[in-house]
Each structure stands twice: as C-alpha cells, then as structure tokens.
Amino acid sequence: MQPSSIKIFANPYNYTNTSKINITQEFIDSKYLKEDLESLSLFVESKVEFDFIMQNMQLKQKLQEYFSDFCRALKEEIVVVQSKFVGKNDILEYLKTHKETRINLRNLLDKELSHIKESRPDIIESWVDYNEFINMCDELDSIN
Image 1: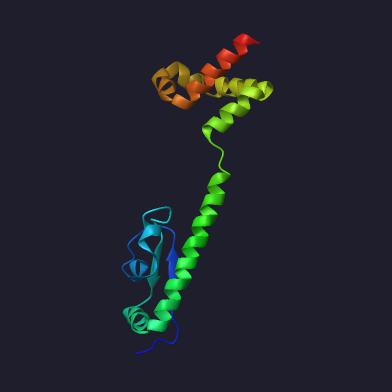
Image 2: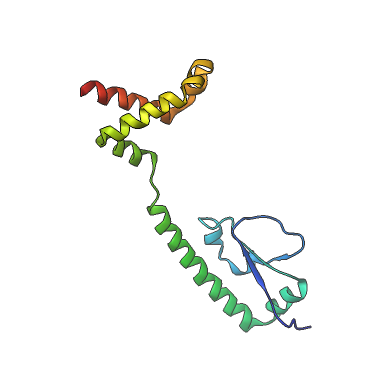
C-alpha cells in the first residue's frame, strides 16, 4: 500500500512517542547522535509510511542524504551559536575592568540578598560563583 503523502516529524527532544514510528536510527548517522544532536528524533505517522520508505530504495537514499546534510548544517549552526555564549569568566573579566558596573552589581546583590544572608548564610556560602564575584570585588576595591 502506498500512502498519499508522508510527513516526517523532527523533534529536538529525545522522547518516546508511542503513536508514531521512530525512524531516527535509519536516517541519522550515529556520529551525530553521539555528539550535539543526541536528543534529535525523527518520526513518521504510521507503519505503512515506514514500510513504504524502507522498501523504496531511491526515496530512502534521498532521505538519508537530506538528513545527513540537515545534521551537518545543524551541527555547524550549533557551533556558531555556542561561540556567541558569554560564560562566567567573560562576565568576571568584564566586571574587573568596569568598576562602576561592578560596584552597582555588588550593591544590588547586597541589598537583594540581605535577608538570605541573615537567615541562611549556608546558602550564600554554597554559591561558588557569587562568592568568587564578592572576593574579586573585595580584592579590586581594596586596591583602589
């Protein structure tokens, strides 16, 4: 039986969808599934669609090529997006050289966290990044 149309669903989250047929293993190269795209899933609506794709070698080949190109392009885009991320060290470096911003942030945090500091100092002590920021402020502001 030949379906009148086939819809392939791409899902960025790896989950089990019992109402659809998972075709991820057939069309996504395992090297992509082991890296940045480990949660990508592909589905078709029915077993009829799945069987049709698997029996039609030309269609199967075209889909494999398409999803290979798709994964390659998606991986490249992930690299571009990740290169734009600002990390903790970037923020701390910025605050080291921008005294006014550093002081304003320190004052804001002191004000907003005063209740927690009084009632649950153990929580504040567990915040590694916050304490690193406070130590940096103390060190830099004692120099100036």
